[in-house]
Image: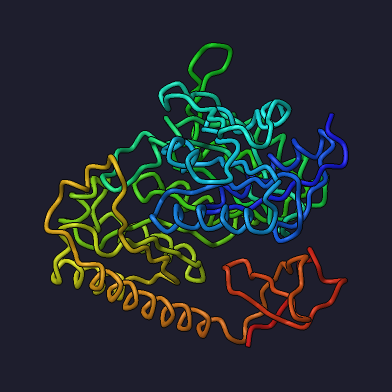
Length: 425
């Protein structure tokens, strides 16, 4: 057992990565490591990487250089999607000691026991086809809301995406075990759980006693709704073709599932959706938004969009802009298309110049700002419950209403992790 050594973590990417980092942290703390801030001196630095965009790769390399300057004798461990996709590339970065692929990240304690500084970087990875086990993870004590991983991997083949290559086939926990985790989290004082996964709506695939398990996401949320002590659930992101009408209606009638959906669109042009190999058309997306608003006019809806995808002409981008403008959605997460190795999108032409991609990104971010403002204004004067975060900053604290309107107020210790009735102004 390691006693007293300091370990620091940095997470790049999605909520799923945050849940896994938190679980890795607990594994090392159980072995005697002492967790410290990433900006502090540590014996081991663990970077949990993303590889959705080229920027995520660059940020990982930048972080390694920073650690090298500050603490050249410290061990540096790289895990996550970038580590699975390009282990040799990472191993060649000066200062990196250990690269853990998708199957090995949760064996980090054992790997650190045999690691010596100064040797060439050790790569512990395997073919992604061999990654078929599910490791439950959840964040704890990092922030008020807990990210609970219930599903991993993806069976889709979107032409721009490397995630199936980085995380493997779709697989998930069982309904019973997720409910057990929720009960444990409730006992530790958690009030809000965000359900996370790579393709959350595909929940249910897995092996149980050597046999295939077939459960559904709808069955999961029905069971979680019964767990005492958890006051709020959020569904982090769900594909429009997997967001069934029964799920929407259930959320509308639930006191625990918040009126808040995040639904990836990626493009408002059917032509581009086809090139992206998405499994729906814009008409289905519009139907889902309309149904949500019919049941829950106050519901927040977030949208993922990619701009500058190969073949996206001015006319196709305008289709996306006009479609989003017409939809009753709340905010947009806008991604600039980034070329990724071994993806089918590399063969699609014409390529959109980077400066045009950036212009389109700016246009949609401006649209997002206007939509968020409009949504917030619709609720001025209403009283809604706000769950305030534990951590204050500059004498202020933040929290979110049930429908995801951000509230900022002077810090009050007694309000942390509490649901407070709040009049929106």
